[in-house]
Length: 246
Length: 246
Image (cartoon, rainbow over all chains, first blue to last red):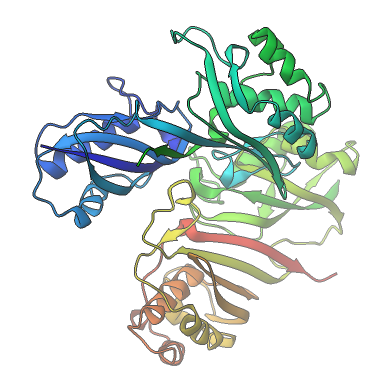
Protein backbone atom coordinates (compact mmCIF):
# COMPACT_ATOMS: atom_id res chain seq x y z
CA UNK A 1 0.00 0.00 0.00
CA UNK A 2 1.18 3.48 -0.84
CA UNK A 3 -0.23 6.68 0.64
CA UNK A 4 -1.01 9.47 -1.84
CA UNK A 5 -1.70 13.14 -1.38
CA UNK A 6 -4.11 14.54 -3.97
CA UNK A 7 -5.23 18.08 -4.81
CA UNK A 8 -8.86 18.38 -5.91
CA UNK A 9 -10.77 21.35 -7.38
CA UNK A 10 -14.55 21.54 -7.61
CA UNK A 11 -17.56 23.71 -8.23
CA UNK A 12 -19.58 23.14 -5.04
CA UNK A 13 -22.89 24.37 -6.49
CA UNK A 14 -24.47 20.98 -7.12
CA UNK A 15 -22.95 19.17 -4.10
CA UNK A 16 -24.21 18.77 -0.56
CA UNK A 17 -20.75 19.79 0.60
CA UNK A 18 -17.60 17.75 1.00
CA UNK A 19 -18.53 15.34 3.78
CA UNK A 20 -20.16 12.02 2.93
CA UNK A 21 -23.89 11.84 3.77
CA UNK A 22 -25.86 8.75 2.77
CA UNK A 23 -28.09 9.30 -0.26
CA UNK A 24 -26.76 12.78 -1.02
CA UNK A 25 -24.34 13.88 -3.74
CA UNK A 26 -21.17 14.89 -1.88
CA UNK A 27 -17.68 15.66 -3.19
CA UNK A 28 -16.06 13.11 -0.88
CA UNK A 29 -18.23 10.22 -2.03
CA UNK A 30 -18.00 11.21 -5.72
CA UNK A 31 -14.20 11.29 -5.54
CA UNK A 32 -14.14 8.04 -3.55
CA UNK A 33 -16.24 6.22 -6.15
CA UNK A 34 -13.86 7.40 -8.85
CA UNK A 35 -10.87 6.07 -6.85
CA UNK A 36 -12.60 2.73 -6.25
CA UNK A 37 -13.23 2.28 -9.98
CA UNK A 38 -9.81 3.57 -11.02
CA UNK A 39 -7.91 1.27 -8.65
CA UNK A 40 -10.46 -1.59 -8.54
CA UNK A 41 -10.21 -1.88 -4.76
CA UNK A 42 -11.83 -0.40 -1.66
CA UNK A 43 -10.51 3.09 -0.89
CA UNK A 44 -11.09 5.50 1.96
CA UNK A 45 -10.09 9.12 1.62
CA UNK A 46 -9.79 11.98 4.05
CA UNK A 47 -10.08 15.61 3.06
CA UNK A 48 -8.32 18.47 4.82
CA UNK A 49 -11.35 20.75 4.86
CA UNK A 50 -15.03 19.91 5.21
CA UNK A 51 -16.37 22.52 2.80
CA UNK A 52 -20.10 23.22 3.13
CA UNK A 53 -22.77 22.82 0.47
CA UNK A 54 -22.24 25.46 -2.22
CA UNK A 55 -18.62 26.18 -1.25
CA UNK A 56 -16.02 25.75 -4.02
CA UNK A 57 -12.40 24.60 -4.00
CA UNK A 58 -9.37 25.16 -6.17
CA UNK A 59 -7.06 23.30 -3.79
CA UNK A 60 -8.76 20.82 -1.47
CA UNK A 61 -6.20 18.23 -0.33
CA UNK A 62 -6.96 14.61 0.50
CA UNK A 63 -4.96 11.50 1.37
CA UNK A 64 -5.70 7.85 0.62
CA UNK A 65 -3.92 4.48 0.54
CA UNK A 66 -3.94 2.16 -2.48
CA UNK A 67 -1.93 -0.60 -4.03
CA UNK A 68 -1.72 0.52 -7.66
CA UNK A 69 0.23 -0.28 -10.81
CA UNK A 70 -0.98 2.86 -12.62
CA UNK A 71 2.08 5.05 -13.41
CA UNK A 72 2.08 8.18 -11.28
CA UNK A 73 2.09 10.48 -14.31
CA UNK A 74 -1.15 8.93 -15.60
CA UNK A 75 -2.94 8.67 -12.28
CA UNK A 76 -4.67 12.09 -12.23
CA UNK A 77 -5.92 11.55 -15.78
CA UNK A 78 -7.24 8.08 -14.92
CA UNK A 79 -9.14 9.40 -11.90
CA UNK A 80 -10.45 12.43 -13.81
CA UNK A 81 -11.81 10.16 -16.54
CA UNK A 82 -14.29 8.86 -13.92
CA UNK A 83 -15.14 12.24 -12.38
CA UNK A 84 -18.03 14.50 -13.45
CA UNK A 85 -17.42 17.93 -15.03
CA UNK A 86 -17.70 19.78 -11.70
CA UNK A 87 -14.71 18.06 -10.04
CA UNK A 88 -11.10 17.81 -11.19
CA UNK A 89 -8.03 16.17 -9.73
CA UNK A 90 -5.16 18.62 -10.15
CA UNK A 91 -2.24 16.67 -8.71
CA UNK A 92 -1.40 13.28 -7.16
CA UNK A 93 1.86 12.52 -5.38
CA UNK A 94 3.14 9.70 -3.17
CA UNK A 95 3.74 10.65 0.45
CA UNK A 96 5.00 9.00 3.63
CA UNK A 97 2.62 6.59 5.37
CA UNK A 98 2.13 8.98 8.25
CA UNK A 99 1.05 11.97 6.12
CA UNK A 100 -2.35 13.22 7.25
CA UNK A 101 -4.11 15.76 5.04
CA UNK A 102 -6.06 17.22 7.97
CA UNK A 103 -3.59 17.13 10.83
CA UNK A 104 -0.46 18.13 8.89
CA UNK A 105 -1.94 21.24 7.24
CA UNK A 106 -0.03 24.32 8.41
CA UNK A 107 -1.77 27.03 6.35
CA UNK A 108 -5.02 27.33 4.36
CA UNK A 109 -6.26 30.15 2.17
CA UNK A 110 -9.86 30.99 1.36
CA UNK A 111 -11.26 33.70 -0.91
CA UNK A 112 -14.75 35.18 -0.57
CA UNK A 113 -16.07 37.00 -3.64
CA UNK A 114 -18.65 39.77 -3.31
CA UNK A 115 -20.39 41.05 -6.46
CA UNK A 116 -20.83 44.69 -5.49
CA UNK A 117 -22.85 46.22 -8.33
CA UNK A 118 -26.43 46.90 -9.37
CA UNK A 119 -26.25 44.50 -12.29
CA UNK A 120 -26.91 40.86 -11.52
CA UNK A 121 -24.04 38.39 -11.79
CA UNK A 122 -26.24 36.03 -13.92
CA UNK A 123 -23.94 33.14 -14.99
CA UNK A 124 -21.56 33.90 -12.11
CA UNK A 125 -24.33 33.87 -9.50
CA UNK A 126 -23.23 30.60 -7.87
CA UNK A 127 -19.62 31.86 -7.54
CA UNK A 128 -20.26 35.26 -5.94
CA UNK A 129 -22.49 36.89 -3.33
CA UNK A 130 -24.50 39.72 -4.83
CA UNK A 131 -24.44 42.67 -2.45
CA UNK A 132 -25.97 45.86 -3.87
CA UNK A 133 -25.02 48.57 -1.32
CA UNK A 134 -21.70 50.20 -2.34
CA UNK A 135 -18.80 48.93 -0.23
CA UNK A 136 -15.67 50.85 0.75
CA UNK A 137 -13.04 48.16 0.17
CA UNK A 138 -10.24 50.24 1.71
CA UNK A 139 -12.21 50.59 4.94
CA UNK A 140 -12.94 46.84 4.88
CA UNK A 141 -9.24 46.19 4.41
CA UNK A 142 -8.48 48.25 7.53
CA UNK A 143 -10.86 46.06 9.49
CA UNK A 144 -9.40 42.94 7.89
CA UNK A 145 -5.92 43.82 9.13
CA UNK A 146 -7.23 43.72 12.71
CA UNK A 147 -8.16 40.05 12.29
CA UNK A 148 -4.56 38.98 11.62
CA UNK A 149 -2.81 37.25 14.52
CA UNK A 150 -3.61 34.73 17.26
CA UNK A 151 -7.03 35.41 18.74
CA UNK A 152 -10.02 33.68 20.28
CA UNK A 153 -12.31 33.66 17.22
CA UNK A 154 -15.43 32.45 19.08
CA UNK A 155 -17.15 35.73 18.12
CA UNK A 156 -16.63 34.83 14.44
CA UNK A 157 -17.87 31.24 14.62
CA UNK A 158 -21.14 29.36 14.56
CA UNK A 159 -21.31 27.65 17.94
CA UNK A 160 -21.86 23.97 18.56
CA UNK A 161 -19.17 22.21 16.58
CA UNK A 162 -17.41 20.87 19.61
CA UNK A 163 -13.92 22.27 19.13
CA UNK A 164 -11.96 22.26 22.39
CA UNK A 165 -10.36 25.60 21.65
CA UNK A 166 -11.62 28.56 19.63
CA UNK A 167 -8.16 30.13 19.45
CA UNK A 168 -6.78 30.27 15.90
CA UNK A 169 -4.01 32.13 14.09
CA UNK A 170 -4.86 34.14 10.99
CA UNK A 171 -1.75 34.78 8.87
CA UNK A 172 -3.15 37.19 6.29
CA UNK A 173 -6.51 38.91 5.84
CA UNK A 174 -6.97 41.37 2.98
CA UNK A 175 -9.78 43.01 1.07
CA UNK A 176 -9.30 44.29 -2.47
CA UNK A 177 -11.65 45.67 -5.08
CA UNK A 178 -11.40 44.23 -8.62
CA UNK A 179 -13.83 46.28 -10.69
CA UNK A 180 -17.35 45.36 -9.59
CA UNK A 181 -16.06 42.64 -7.27
CA UNK A 182 -14.69 42.90 -3.74
CA UNK A 183 -12.53 39.95 -2.68
CA UNK A 184 -11.68 38.95 0.88
CA UNK A 185 -8.60 36.73 1.03
CA UNK A 186 -7.78 35.09 4.36
CA UNK A 187 -5.20 32.48 5.33
CA UNK A 188 -4.49 30.83 8.65
CA UNK A 189 -3.59 27.71 10.56
CA UNK A 190 -7.20 26.70 10.87
CA UNK A 191 -10.74 28.04 10.77
CA UNK A 192 -13.78 27.56 12.95
CA UNK A 193 -17.18 26.64 11.54
CA UNK A 194 -18.45 29.45 9.24
CA UNK A 195 -15.56 31.67 10.36
CA UNK A 196 -14.68 33.07 6.92
CA UNK A 197 -18.33 33.69 6.11
CA UNK A 198 -18.91 35.53 9.42
CA UNK A 199 -15.73 37.59 8.99
CA UNK A 200 -16.99 38.54 5.52
CA UNK A 201 -20.46 39.43 6.84
CA UNK A 202 -18.83 41.59 9.49
CA UNK A 203 -16.50 43.37 7.05
CA UNK A 204 -19.48 44.09 4.80
CA UNK A 205 -21.11 45.98 7.70
CA UNK A 206 -17.86 47.93 8.06
CA UNK A 207 -17.67 48.52 4.29
CA UNK A 208 -21.18 49.94 4.10
CA UNK A 209 -20.52 52.25 7.05
CA UNK A 210 -22.51 50.64 9.84
CA UNK A 211 -19.46 49.96 12.03
CA UNK A 212 -15.94 51.44 12.23
CA UNK A 213 -13.01 49.09 11.48
CA UNK A 214 -12.28 49.05 15.24
CA UNK A 215 -15.52 47.13 15.86
CA UNK A 216 -13.53 44.02 14.92
CA UNK A 217 -11.41 44.47 18.05
CA UNK A 218 -14.48 44.38 20.24
CA UNK A 219 -15.78 41.15 18.67
CA UNK A 220 -12.36 39.56 19.26
CA UNK A 221 -12.15 40.88 22.84
CA UNK A 222 -15.66 39.87 23.89
CA UNK A 223 -15.77 36.67 21.77
CA UNK A 224 -19.52 37.19 21.40
CA UNK A 225 -21.07 35.98 18.14
CA UNK A 226 -23.96 38.45 18.56
CA UNK A 227 -21.56 41.37 18.04
CA UNK A 228 -20.46 40.17 14.60
CA UNK A 229 -22.21 40.48 11.24
CA UNK A 230 -24.38 37.92 9.46
CA UNK A 231 -23.10 34.67 7.96
CA UNK A 232 -22.94 35.35 4.22
CA UNK A 233 -24.10 32.65 1.75
CA UNK A 234 -21.73 29.78 0.86
CA UNK A 235 -21.55 30.29 -2.92
CA UNK A 236 -19.06 33.18 -2.67
CA UNK A 237 -16.52 31.06 -0.81
CA UNK A 238 -13.62 29.14 -2.36
CA UNK A 239 -10.90 27.12 -0.65
CA UNK A 240 -7.85 28.22 -2.64
CA UNK A 241 -4.95 26.17 -1.25
CA UNK A 242 -3.68 24.21 1.72
CA UNK A 243 0.03 24.23 2.64
CA UNK A 244 2.06 21.48 4.32
CA UNK A 245 5.57 21.23 5.69
CA UNK A 246 8.04 19.87 3.16
CA UNK B 1 -50.94 51.91 -25.06
CA UNK B 2 -47.25 52.62 -25.44
CA UNK B 3 -44.70 50.42 -27.19
CA UNK B 4 -41.46 49.75 -25.28
CA UNK B 5 -38.13 48.36 -26.38
CA UNK B 6 -36.36 46.39 -23.64
CA UNK B 7 -32.88 44.89 -23.37
CA UNK B 8 -32.67 41.62 -21.46
CA UNK B 9 -29.65 39.62 -20.24
CA UNK B 10 -29.81 36.01 -19.08
CA UNK B 11 -27.89 32.90 -18.20
CA UNK B 12 -29.48 30.34 -20.51
CA UNK B 13 -28.28 27.28 -18.58
CA UNK B 14 -31.55 26.50 -16.81
CA UNK B 15 -33.91 27.57 -19.61
CA UNK B 16 -35.35 25.63 -22.52
CA UNK B 17 -34.30 28.51 -24.75
CA UNK B 18 -36.02 31.79 -25.49
CA UNK B 19 -39.15 30.67 -27.31
CA UNK B 20 -42.30 29.84 -25.33
CA UNK B 21 -43.09 26.12 -25.09
CA UNK B 22 -46.02 24.99 -22.94
CA UNK B 23 -44.92 23.45 -19.64
CA UNK B 24 -41.23 24.30 -20.07
CA UNK B 25 -39.21 27.06 -18.39
CA UNK B 26 -38.40 29.50 -21.20
CA UNK B 27 -36.95 33.00 -21.06
CA UNK B 28 -39.81 34.47 -23.06
CA UNK B 29 -42.52 33.14 -20.76
CA UNK B 30 -40.56 34.01 -17.60
CA UNK B 31 -40.14 37.62 -18.77
CA UNK B 32 -43.76 37.77 -19.91
CA UNK B 33 -45.05 36.65 -16.52
CA UNK B 34 -42.97 39.36 -14.87
CA UNK B 35 -44.44 41.99 -17.23
CA UNK B 36 -47.99 40.75 -16.57
CA UNK B 37 -47.49 41.08 -12.81
CA UNK B 38 -45.63 44.38 -13.04
CA UNK B 39 -48.25 46.06 -15.22
CA UNK B 40 -51.27 44.08 -14.01
CA UNK B 41 -52.54 43.52 -17.54
CA UNK B 42 -52.11 41.00 -20.36
CA UNK B 43 -48.83 41.50 -22.23
CA UNK B 44 -47.34 39.89 -25.32
CA UNK B 45 -43.68 40.30 -26.09
CA UNK B 46 -41.54 39.56 -29.09
CA UNK B 47 -37.81 38.89 -28.91
CA UNK B 48 -35.36 39.69 -31.68
CA UNK B 49 -33.50 36.40 -31.44
CA UNK B 50 -34.78 32.91 -30.58
CA UNK B 51 -31.78 31.74 -28.59
CA UNK B 52 -31.60 27.96 -28.07
CA UNK B 53 -31.57 26.08 -24.78
CA UNK B 54 -28.29 26.76 -22.98
CA UNK B 55 -27.46 29.89 -25.00
CA UNK B 56 -26.87 33.08 -22.99
CA UNK B 57 -27.59 36.74 -23.71
CA UNK B 58 -26.16 40.04 -22.62
CA UNK B 59 -28.33 42.03 -25.00
CA UNK B 60 -31.48 40.30 -26.19
CA UNK B 61 -33.99 42.94 -27.35
CA UNK B 62 -37.78 42.64 -27.11
CA UNK B 63 -40.77 44.89 -27.73
CA UNK B 64 -44.14 44.95 -26.00
CA UNK B 65 -47.16 47.26 -25.62
CA UNK B 66 -48.61 48.33 -22.26
CA UNK B 67 -50.64 51.06 -20.69
CA UNK B 68 -48.58 51.91 -17.61
CA UNK B 69 -48.32 54.61 -14.94
CA UNK B 70 -44.94 53.35 -13.67
CA UNK B 71 -42.34 56.09 -14.25
CA UNK B 72 -39.89 55.07 -16.96
CA UNK B 73 -36.88 55.38 -14.64
CA UNK B 74 -38.38 52.82 -12.24
CA UNK B 75 -39.69 50.40 -14.83
CA UNK B 76 -36.61 48.15 -15.19
CA UNK B 77 -36.33 47.85 -11.40
CA UNK B 78 -40.01 46.95 -11.08
CA UNK B 79 -39.75 44.25 -13.72
CA UNK B 80 -36.48 42.90 -12.27
CA UNK B 81 -38.09 42.59 -8.83
CA UNK B 82 -40.28 39.84 -10.33
CA UNK B 83 -37.53 38.11 -12.33
CA UNK B 84 -35.40 35.19 -11.09
CA UNK B 85 -31.63 35.56 -10.54
CA UNK B 86 -30.75 34.23 -14.00
CA UNK B 87 -32.52 37.01 -15.95
CA UNK B 88 -32.08 40.77 -15.78
CA UNK B 89 -33.69 43.67 -17.58
CA UNK B 90 -30.93 46.10 -18.48
CA UNK B 91 -32.89 48.91 -20.16
CA UNK B 92 -36.43 49.93 -21.06
CA UNK B 93 -37.29 52.79 -23.42
CA UNK B 94 -40.45 53.98 -25.17
CA UNK B 95 -40.42 53.61 -28.94
CA UNK B 96 -42.71 54.37 -31.87
CA UNK B 97 -45.73 52.10 -32.33
CA UNK B 98 -44.24 50.56 -35.46
CA UNK B 99 -40.92 49.51 -33.88
CA UNK B 100 -40.39 45.79 -34.32
CA UNK B 101 -37.55 44.13 -32.36
CA UNK B 102 -37.14 41.37 -34.94
CA UNK B 103 -37.74 43.11 -38.25
CA UNK B 104 -35.90 46.37 -37.46
CA UNK B 105 -32.65 44.81 -36.24
CA UNK B 106 -29.79 45.83 -38.53
CA UNK B 107 -26.86 44.17 -36.77
CA UNK B 108 -26.38 41.45 -34.11
CA UNK B 109 -23.24 40.29 -32.36
CA UNK B 110 -22.61 36.86 -30.85
CA UNK B 111 -19.58 35.58 -28.98
CA UNK B 112 -18.61 31.91 -28.72
CA UNK B 113 -16.19 31.03 -25.90
CA UNK B 114 -13.89 28.01 -26.17
CA UNK B 115 -12.03 26.85 -23.04
CA UNK B 116 -8.83 25.59 -24.67
CA UNK B 117 -6.84 24.05 -21.82
CA UNK B 118 -6.30 20.73 -20.05
CA UNK B 119 -7.81 21.99 -16.81
CA UNK B 120 -11.57 21.78 -16.55
CA UNK B 121 -13.58 25.01 -16.49
CA UNK B 122 -15.52 23.79 -13.37
CA UNK B 123 -17.75 26.74 -12.32
CA UNK B 124 -17.51 28.22 -15.83
CA UNK B 125 -18.52 24.98 -17.54
CA UNK B 126 -21.98 26.22 -18.61
CA UNK B 127 -20.47 29.39 -20.14
CA UNK B 128 -17.69 27.83 -22.25
CA UNK B 129 -17.07 24.83 -24.48
CA UNK B 130 -14.17 22.76 -23.19
CA UNK B 131 -11.94 21.78 -26.12
CA UNK B 132 -8.67 20.10 -25.10
CA UNK B 133 -6.64 19.96 -28.35
CA UNK B 134 -4.47 23.10 -28.65
CA UNK B 135 -5.94 25.62 -31.09
CA UNK B 136 -4.03 28.08 -33.26
CA UNK B 137 -6.16 31.19 -32.80
CA UNK B 138 -4.28 33.16 -35.45
CA UNK B 139 -5.00 30.48 -38.05
CA UNK B 140 -8.66 30.43 -36.95
CA UNK B 141 -8.74 34.20 -37.34
CA UNK B 142 -7.51 33.88 -40.93
CA UNK B 143 -10.39 31.50 -41.65
CA UNK B 144 -12.81 33.81 -39.81
CA UNK B 145 -11.91 36.73 -42.09
CA UNK B 146 -13.07 34.68 -45.10
CA UNK B 147 -16.58 34.49 -43.63
CA UNK B 148 -17.05 38.27 -43.68
CA UNK B 149 -19.30 39.60 -46.43
CA UNK B 150 -22.50 38.62 -48.23
CA UNK B 151 -22.62 34.90 -48.90
CA UNK B 152 -24.99 31.98 -49.19
CA UNK B 153 -24.46 30.47 -45.71
CA UNK B 154 -26.45 27.26 -46.35
CA UNK B 155 -23.24 25.28 -45.74
CA UNK B 156 -23.08 26.76 -42.24
CA UNK B 157 -26.70 26.14 -41.25
CA UNK B 158 -28.83 23.33 -39.92
CA UNK B 159 -31.38 22.71 -42.64
CA UNK B 160 -35.13 22.64 -42.27
CA UNK B 161 -36.01 25.98 -40.71
CA UNK B 162 -37.88 27.18 -43.72
CA UNK B 163 -36.08 30.44 -44.48
CA UNK B 164 -36.73 31.60 -48.02
CA UNK B 165 -33.14 32.71 -48.52
CA UNK B 166 -29.90 31.45 -46.97
CA UNK B 167 -27.98 34.55 -48.06
CA UNK B 168 -26.77 36.64 -45.14
CA UNK B 169 -24.22 39.41 -44.58
CA UNK B 170 -21.56 38.96 -41.91
CA UNK B 171 -20.08 42.31 -40.89
CA UNK B 172 -17.23 41.13 -38.65
CA UNK B 173 -15.83 37.73 -37.73
CA UNK B 174 -12.78 37.52 -35.50
CA UNK B 175 -11.01 34.97 -33.33
CA UNK B 176 -8.80 36.01 -30.42
CA UNK B 177 -7.03 34.10 -27.67
CA UNK B 178 -7.46 35.40 -24.10
CA UNK B 179 -5.20 33.21 -21.99
CA UNK B 180 -6.76 29.75 -21.89
CA UNK B 181 -9.83 30.91 -23.78
CA UNK B 182 -10.37 31.37 -27.50
CA UNK B 183 -13.23 33.70 -28.39
CA UNK B 184 -15.03 33.88 -31.73
CA UNK B 185 -16.88 37.18 -32.17
CA UNK B 186 -19.24 37.50 -35.13
CA UNK B 187 -21.71 40.18 -36.14
CA UNK B 188 -24.09 40.38 -39.04
CA UNK B 189 -27.47 41.35 -40.39
CA UNK B 190 -28.93 37.99 -39.50
CA UNK B 191 -27.99 34.39 -38.77
CA UNK B 192 -29.35 31.05 -39.94
CA UNK B 193 -30.22 28.26 -37.51
CA UNK B 194 -27.06 27.10 -35.65
CA UNK B 195 -24.92 29.25 -37.97
CA UNK B 196 -22.59 30.62 -35.28
CA UNK B 197 -22.16 27.19 -33.70
CA UNK B 198 -21.34 25.59 -37.07
CA UNK B 199 -18.91 28.40 -37.99
CA UNK B 200 -17.23 27.81 -34.60
CA UNK B 201 -17.08 24.04 -35.12
CA UNK B 202 -15.54 24.63 -38.55
CA UNK B 203 -12.95 27.12 -37.27
CA UNK B 204 -11.98 24.64 -34.53
CA UNK B 205 -11.11 22.11 -37.25
CA UNK B 206 -8.98 24.81 -38.88
CA UNK B 207 -7.41 25.73 -35.54
CA UNK B 208 -6.37 22.17 -34.75
CA UNK B 209 -4.85 21.76 -38.22
CA UNK B 210 -7.35 19.49 -39.97
CA UNK B 211 -8.26 22.06 -42.65
CA UNK B 212 -6.50 25.11 -44.10
CA UNK B 213 -8.24 28.50 -43.63
CA UNK B 214 -9.18 28.35 -47.36
CA UNK B 215 -11.53 25.44 -46.64
CA UNK B 216 -14.07 28.08 -45.58
CA UNK B 217 -14.20 29.34 -49.18
CA UNK B 218 -15.19 25.90 -50.41
CA UNK B 219 -18.02 25.58 -47.86
CA UNK B 220 -19.35 28.98 -48.95
CA UNK B 221 -18.98 28.16 -52.67
CA UNK B 222 -20.61 24.73 -52.51
CA UNK B 223 -23.13 25.64 -49.76
CA UNK B 224 -22.95 22.05 -48.55
CA UNK B 225 -23.41 21.48 -44.81
CA UNK B 226 -21.47 18.22 -45.01
CA UNK B 227 -18.27 20.14 -45.82
CA UNK B 228 -18.42 22.17 -42.58
CA UNK B 229 -17.41 21.20 -39.04
CA UNK B 230 -19.64 19.95 -36.23
CA UNK B 231 -22.23 22.05 -34.41
CA UNK B 232 -20.57 22.94 -31.10
CA UNK B 233 -22.64 22.86 -27.86
CA UNK B 234 -24.91 25.81 -26.99
CA UNK B 235 -23.39 26.76 -23.62
CA UNK B 236 -20.42 28.60 -25.14
CA UNK B 237 -22.68 30.97 -27.08
CA UNK B 238 -23.81 34.42 -25.96
CA UNK B 239 -25.90 37.01 -27.81
CA UNK B 240 -24.00 40.19 -27.01
CA UNK B 241 -26.01 42.98 -28.62
CA UNK B 242 -28.54 43.88 -31.28
CA UNK B 243 -28.35 47.21 -33.10
CA UNK B 244 -31.22 49.26 -34.58
CA UNK B 245 -31.45 52.34 -36.76
CA UNK B 246 -31.80 55.53 -34.71
